[in-house]
Image 1 (cartoon, rainbow, N blue to C red):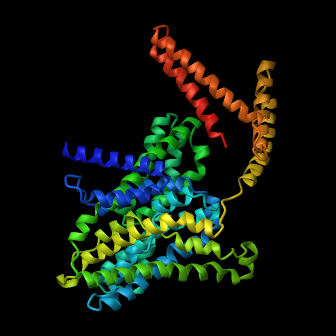
Image 2: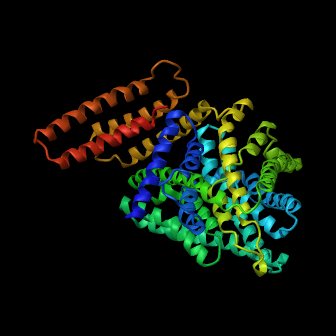
Image 3: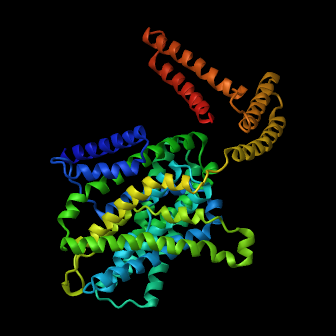
Length: 523
């Protein structure tokens, strides 16, 4: 019962914190971390110590999976070069930069342990990147690069961390062994994710019940991650590969009812897990402060130095990574250099998250031979990097984007492209109707033709409606009023006993679906 009470209190606090963040216009990850920091010192509030395995195998896979499902595979493939330069190149550069800085300040600590901490603080967080980038309306390509980086960099950081921990244990690590480790982790993860995507896709295609589709979708990231870890491959890579492959094929794998239900289901799961993750990060403060095993002045100096190194190396890396590759004429023709404000924003968007804390908590208790090292200080540094990057960088990112004059993608251009494609879609729909309309009542055929024309006209109206109410907007407004009136009549009939509850439920479901569609199309 005690565990259940704690779970309800934590989820309730996360939901209230997210609601308060929306009311105040603050990014939810920022407010939830601050709330967790404050609540960690409140007597009687649930004292939850993060389990690294639970985070890496139980919480992170669903979050990465839903992010991968929503990622555009063509956009991901087009931006693969900058994504890999950030997700692999920058992770390695950050790990060794932090390692050198830390070893210079704490020469008694082995270099392998210092690099291990560098690997811990290297990867920006997928949840933070998605939550912040989408919330403030950054240009679509920047969002794709940041999300792509955060989907892959956890795997590269954890591989480097495993190698560093092996070196900390006194094992001589050769280049060949590192190559084998990377191939097993990354290559195995890709293979397992691809196989899982094929098998799960076939099961989805055979399922006709939306509830079973949702159940399978929930089990997919957890099952794929567990199988990959049991086979000593990267569960993160496997989940991301499976999510990208399945997300790209969802329109042909799932029925319309399954897709609608799955979208709503994953929005809820994502909302709850995101809130819970950032709240739990903040709640670790009391235990982490208690476990610091270094005198305060040294701890402060080392923490500030590592934090500066983490922030600085991202800027040092991002600018050359953006422009040096474009010195190659073929790449420059295909992808012209962006203005300097683009890499500036990418460099500033380096929020860390729960993976950094989970990896820090997974650090070994001692070095080879049982020799101690400042593990408590390392965990404190990782925690500080998370809080500072999420609170300061996350809070200032909207201001930085405005100062850099980085406008979101032009909605008019999006509407124009949509209208052009809708025009072709309408032509295809009319041709299919003409081919299959034999024997159908003329009134039904004309009604369907009118529906296609209405959708096409609505798409073109969104391009330049101006301030006046367009016919489609008037239709949505009036139809919503009509639906409200219909709903009242059916509810009154149920209350008076003229219709059973089942009839009301069926009718409300149809009206709710129509109203949700109207609201979705509202610009």
